[in-house]
Structures are given as C-alpha cells and as structure tokens.
Length: 116
Image (cartoon, rainbow, N blue to C red):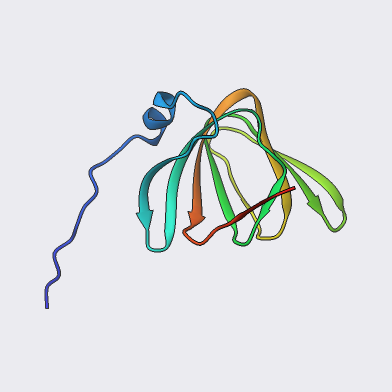
C-alpha cells in the first residue's frame, strides 16, 4: 500500500545557529528516528561530562575543540568548518570554542549527561 511521504521544509542549519543568542542553548531542528538533530552556539568552554550514548558533532561555522580523557591519556581534537567527529559513549570530554562556533549535533533521545 502507498504511504504518503511527510516532508520537512528545507532549513538552513547555519542560519538557525546564527540566530541563536544564548551559547549552549540547543535548538532542535528535527527528530530523525530516535535522534534529535540540534544546533548549538558555542562560546568558550562547556562543562566536563560524559554520556550514556554516542554524540555526533558537525561544525557549521568556526572551530570546535574537543578534549577527551582516553585510556592512553588525554587527547585534544580540533574540528574546523565542514568537519565532523563522534565522541563515543562513556568518554569524558569537554568541548570549547574560544572564538565561537555553530555546531550541529545528533544525539539519541535517551542520552543523559553526567557532569564531572
């Protein structure tokens, strides 16, 4: 049987992010199955934490630094515009952007944060 296709109107995630005034206040663009697709304005550092689920980052504008505490020791990754990364569940991390950034994230709806 034919099922009608429900279509989300096109949106510019960058424009949404540029319209956000408060840093670290996520805006949900849509849901995708069990995932929230969100846009966040980063300014400065976010608190050190970990999750019970993986977290996907995509840099729309600016630069994002991700400091992680891995088994082999601390590691820092720098993502530039157009780059993405996944922080695996359970990994303690801190994200920051000294000059500001706009980031798209995909997070499972059951994600929880443990601040350290």
